[in-house]
Length: 275
Ligand code: NDP
Image (tube, rainbow, N blue to C red; front, side):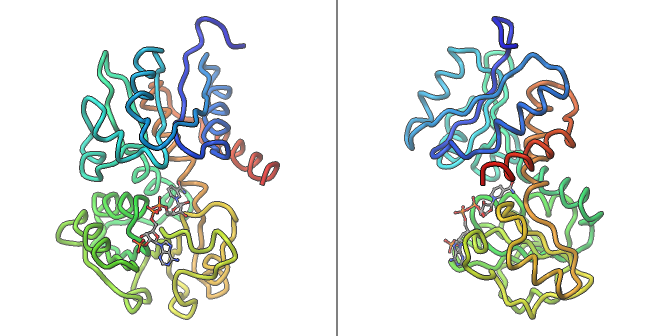
């Protein structure tokens, strides 16, 4: 029951009504018995600064940040973690005394999700990332930190591919679809497959022995994942990443280990019911 003692965490973004964050985080608070509640606030583009002032004034304990505020918040917090500073983007704000600290939990969520779902270990492996936007950049940085030997970024706009690949230092490079067959892990970080809009790369480039990860989680089976499975590859969608990044935020806010199974079943139930 919500009372005067209840601690509040929230997500800001626009649009926000379809965010799964409230379902996932409230499932986590319920499963751990913490007297916390999680809300969603629609905050218009350009209004991240007053939203952070509100966080300070209202004593909101933790904030998730989604589109279109991730970059703006990186410039508004008192300081950023190393990952958030490198990415120039924040998806999680943590209080440290009076300071607001910007963090990025997408990359850690991605690495943990791939390991949990497939057992894939990044050290010495070849990764192809399709796309070079915010999610792709988090994947590139985290794959490099996890020890990947080669991180090839394929993107429609080559200049953005170069900026994303640079996050991986010596192991990052701009690449083409020709690099897909040699990859141990192929990651779709474009929105292609969310609508009935085909595959982000040719199905003929995929094969058994590869892990193919689509960051999309709705639909659960994208055309890319269906093609990967058909060709004998291991296929995984983006739901586990969503849950694991929320788990990292939960841990930073509360200090408690996240109840990942409860968080995932909350997300699955919401996806089944409302979409
Ligand atoms: P961005 O808009 O930041 O980046 C999108 C990328 O996809 C860009 O590189 C863009 O290329 C490319 N792209 C978009 N449309 C096309 C197209 N028609 N053809 C070729 N390339 C295209 O988006 P995000 O990085 O935030 O999100 C990407 C995907 O990842 C989304 O599906 C999102 O839902 C998912 N995601 C999942 C998360 C999870 O937890 N599972 C977390 C975050 C995102 P260009 O640079 O040329 O414009």
